[in-house]
Image 1 (tube, rainbow, N blue to C red):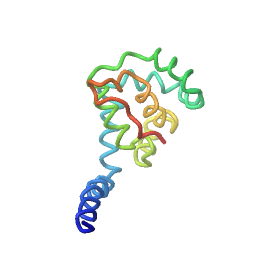
Image 2 (cartoon, one colour; image 1 turned 30 degrees about the vertical axis):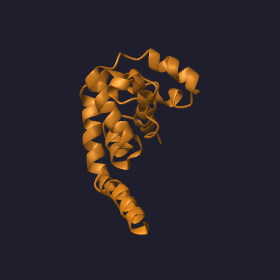
Image 3 (cartoon, helix red, strand yellow; image 1 turned 90 degrees about the vertical axis):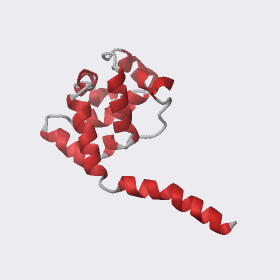
Image 4 (cartoon, rainbow, N blue to C red; image 1 turned 60 degrees about the horizontal axis):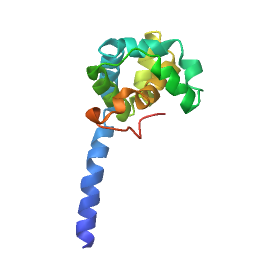
Length: 133
């Protein structure tokens, strides 16, 4: 019985350990896709609002997200990948964003915006409970 529990734990933890390796390069790729691809207009909406929006209450922020461009299905998949991979907190993504004129809060706010957007619909995988900084 003890061996079975240990085996289950090892199998459950092994993928997490593997996904942590090279997270920076993976997040950099996900970030590039998010900020220049399908979500560009959704992301750019928050660019100038980030410093203010990051301090908003959840109910006020829902209103801010409601005013954003409607994220396409493809944007939702990209934003979910970026968010659930913890990329809004990734130092490589943050530094790369700064080099491209994005403030740190503009990157961090995307995870929160994704969590309050239509991208949490069941057709995209449902609620997102992790990923924000």
